[in-house]
Image (tube, rainbow, N blue to C red; front, top):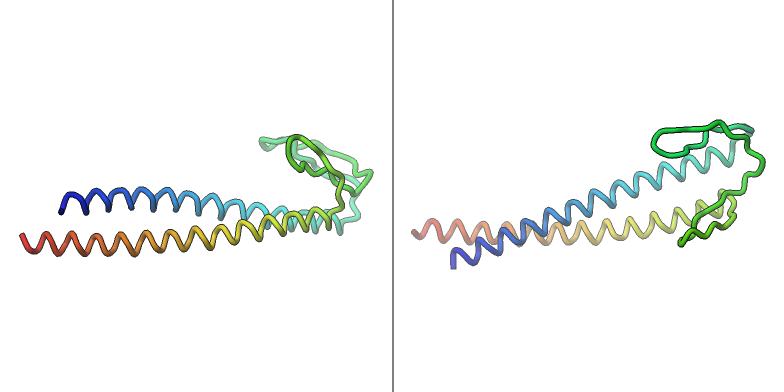
Length: 130
């Protein structure tokens, strides 16, 4: 009985750690989307005609803004032209989904922690009997 509880506790701890990794990923996505939304607002309101455009991996190129419409990847390499406000709506939808996922994952994590606490209590009771 003691061994079975211990095995369940180890498995639950592993599930809890994986859930914590998922939560960290979701939190990072939320932070990135919020920052992106702020940058879109700034770019939309700006009258600047030149920007530093990221090529990736910390490399930028000076670019001239000829049109404020954006090219948005909608999946499978398909680009759609959208305004900053249209793009912001897409970001807001993604933020909403990630926020809902965060609530769900946080609930799972809390459930795992409660269950783990109960198992630790059972193990301590069994240990005190011996």
